[in-house]
Image 1 (tube, rainbow, N blue to C red):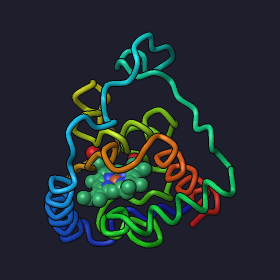
Image 2 (cartoon, rainbow, N blue to C red):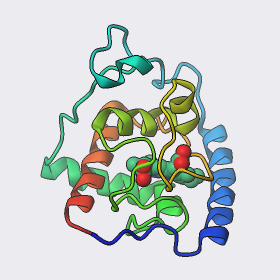
Image 3 (cartoon, rainbow, N blue to C red):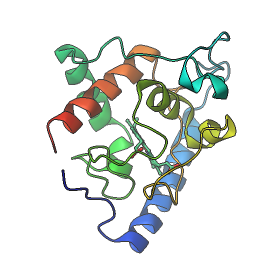
Image 4 (cartoon, rainbow, N blue to C red):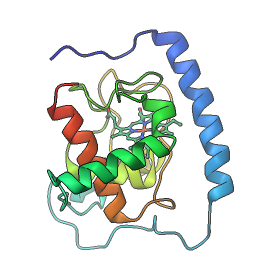
Length: 164
Ligand code: HEC
């Protein structure tokens, strides 16, 4: 599959960072104390255990209702601003190519989505690949519950599988 990474590498990132600033403001405004984005449970097993992350599997994978719900959430939130309506990464990384900054497994993507890229790296998960330079991904654990995060990932996977 052809990878469409950075149509305009330089300006693309500048726009991405501007988007990050705007989203940070929104997130700051929406931030509530005692949020869901707390640490994952202890007793982790599996490959990511070294980073203190329990290995997770999307319980809603391939579920048509979850994919539809995820599509709606994606379209209604800032994901669109940074990753583009078609998920092809207008300003930030594409979500439908084969390049993944931290990994393509459910665990990594769940915690990236929930906690953001800064916290993921703080846990020791390395930023890899050529997609991984530039801006950071905000966490969305304060906006979405676990089921909604899985719905978003079901949607992203469905689009990736469709070869968009
Ligand atoms: C402010 C811009 C911004 C917003 C808003 C945003 N992201 Fe991201 N996202 C990024 C950046 C930047 C990265 C890459 C992070 C890095 O390189 O450390 C990323 C990475 C990702 C990845 C991993 C992609 C890869 O190629 O490895 C997924 C999946 C993702 N975002 C999904 C989402 C979803 C779903 C939403 C909405 C709930 C969202 N993002 C909102 C900027 C954003």
